[in-house]
Length: 229
Image 1: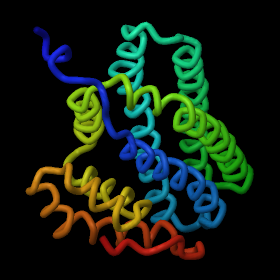
Image 2: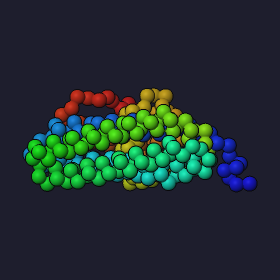
Image 3: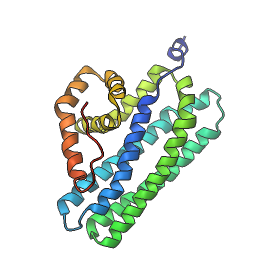
Image 4: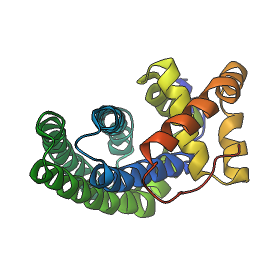
């Protein structure tokens, strides 16, 4: 008997919703942060660009992981492929928009004028719009099917692969982004799935690094909330 046959389908996909909230928030804020950044502040331009590229890379890996680990399992379960095809199409559209945003980001870094800043802000807002539409559809129509189709171990493999895509120090900061979006109950349930040493490293290093980085990135914006987990 295969491992999958021995393990009944059924997983809790709410951790994916938390990750989606992070991407939605960060790409929304990125446009505002770029708009508020003075082209004469080279240090802040570098800081914002690094954060933008990290988020672009994280979203790219997130979608690649879904393409490789989730959609094929839904197809093998002989479900209606319409939604899966739409998910893949939306991933391609978002990926194209991300490549364009990366190019616009480079122009902003090197030229630093109002015109390139405006193009980048407009591009980030278009990306956020596409992403918002995609995440809403995925959460409303796809995650319920995933929850009934994938096993807990299959779902856990997706989460582990997602965190492994980031260097350890950056993964700890990303945990801070997740904690920012979670209420106390959500964070407690999410953190319980993490290895004990990761929870400790987050409390000692990740939480502080996240707070310091986001304070600098958002220093010209209104506060968006506090992380106290």
